[in-house]
Image: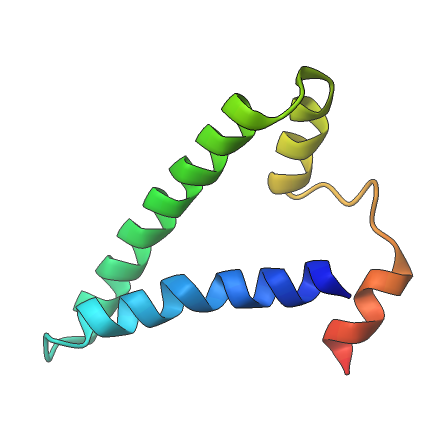
Length: 83
């Protein structure tokens, strides 16, 4: 259960940053634009870490998973987030 919990915690960081930075401006589009910018920054950071730190054998499978592949998905990891 640590991976889903870590994923949830990792998703909260950009959310709080978007609300903190975009919340200073009264327009709702400011939060949206800050969210899009943060998504690009975190996506670039994740891709950089994968390409630099990951083993060459696993880079392709990780990139496929990030792009939306569910080849290694298991029901046991889905049970906890649905509760």
